[in-house]
Amino acid sequence: MIKEIEQIAEVAGYLWQKGWAERNGGNITVNITGSLSAAYKSSPAVKGPISIGQKLPRLKGCFFYCKGTGKRMRDLSRSPMENGSIIRICDDCEHYEIISDVPVMPTSELPSHLAVHNYLIEHGSPFKASLHTHPIELVALTHSREWLEKDAATNMLWSMIPETKAFCPKGLGMVPYMLPGSVELAKATIDTIDEGYDVVMWEKHGVFAVDTNIIDAFDQVDVLNKAAQIYIAGRNMGFVPEGMTAAQMAEMSKAFNLPK
Ligand code: 13P
Ligand code: ZN
Image: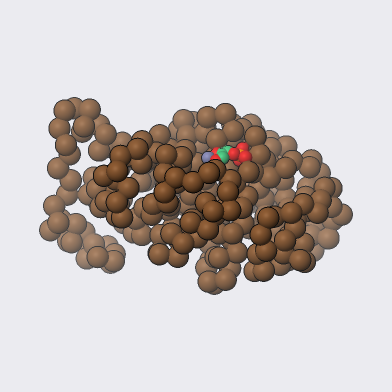
């Protein structure tokens, strides 16, 4: 099994252990074009062509591992090729084919995943992995108008524990509630990534994070959710957490060479 799929299986196990992956909750796609042999790439289609629902010209010649729709992360962690599949984007960039042995239909969030991969390639990004998950505390924050304001959650989360900004220097973007799996949600996700975020909240639903590999994408969400847990722990103890001061944040940003 290629390294990327081993990492996906590892992360799927963490998502289940964290309680972020109820039933079939969450999905993962990784661009594995660079890791497949030429012989494998020319395998006959097991299923398809299937419409993507949009034309994504930058995905020509690309291959992705995709979690299967309705499949459980806890099952994927043990059997990634029975709970996900490898797809090949067709030359028209509007369809894909499944080429792995078990024809598992890809995640319902494929519109967002593939549109984001198309955007990343277009912008010369080294990011190859995208993760959607349902982290409890981060999702809870999006049920309050206060934290949906631009960068309100980012600044609060950064101030909970110094490493948060160091490891998530771009903060947390916000996408207003939209129908799961919709092309509108995909477009809004790209717009928010285009603003400079690599971790995006889907209001009252979950997180969408991109990074070079799936381990790093998971780590970003883990770090941000930990900060949210600290905030909530303070509230549960009956006080509003103070947060690091502006001077402490500025000192930290300078020491770690982070943007202001
Ligand atoms: P899938 O099972 O189709 O991946 O859907 C899970 C999910 O979290 C949708 O937002
Ligand atoms: Zn979801």
